[in-house]
Length: 348
Image 1 (cartoon, rainbow, N blue to C red):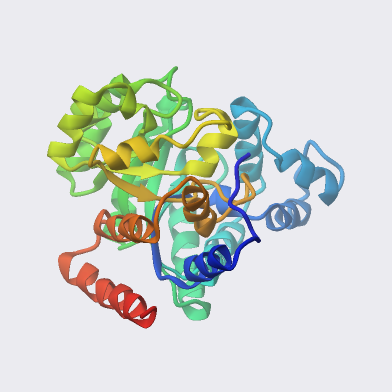
Image 2: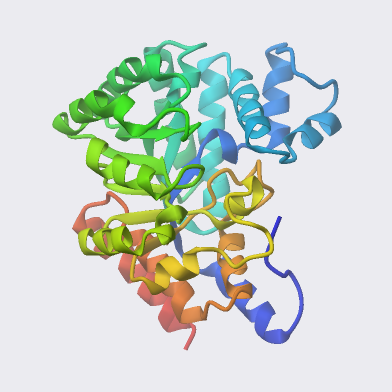
């Protein structure tokens, strides 16, 4: 897996310092994939969950990426450790702490509701979310909004996830509906009606597309689902004509370089496609996806691009584009922009 250099010239050290200290936003990160293996192992032991390993050392090795099907297994087994509202609330509260530690001021975070609904009721999930938010806000300066994610490989859950999301919206806990999982096997049209209902009810809608499948998956997500943002979307570079359409429509792309290298959607010996996307004028944002499962964090995404020739000004532009692509109100964005501008001014 490609990671940024952690030592070297004085210039590189200064860049790393800036990346660590700069205020950041993140709009493509999964709660379960951001949970450290130590935390999920402790929850599993507390709940006497039968894991495919017998020690924390084996669990850490199990977390190491092998291939995408194995990643899905790890993800599902991590979710399966959650058996009570307190487990999920703890995971949410810890996410706040981890984001604040990285100077991620605002996040829009996916929760894999299709999977959690196997163990907990919608009421229990929303109560856990409320408890976790309250705890997180008490111990952290970070702000987080949540998106209910449908697992493509469990299409029969989409109605229940939508109902949960609508209930969560009424409680002020959930802002949107997402779609993740096995992209090739479960295309966007399978979820068209659910997305229409979500939009009509005022939920924001986003979808993973153009990562494991071709650029046509991006077009289908926009045409069939009216997705407001595209998760990953790196295959857009295979169709300059449709990239021009996306540029004109100003659809943001939630790009996650390290995870793309990890799962092999971008070959490890090539520059990341975000360079082409950026040069095409697309609205690229930068995100960490599943940081605990790919041994990364948000600053590392910026570091990868710096090692591939992105200038500080270009990295800063990606950061501001990420903030602009959030679902915050214009007034809220303006407030955060002042913080961003104060940091930029402090650099001299």
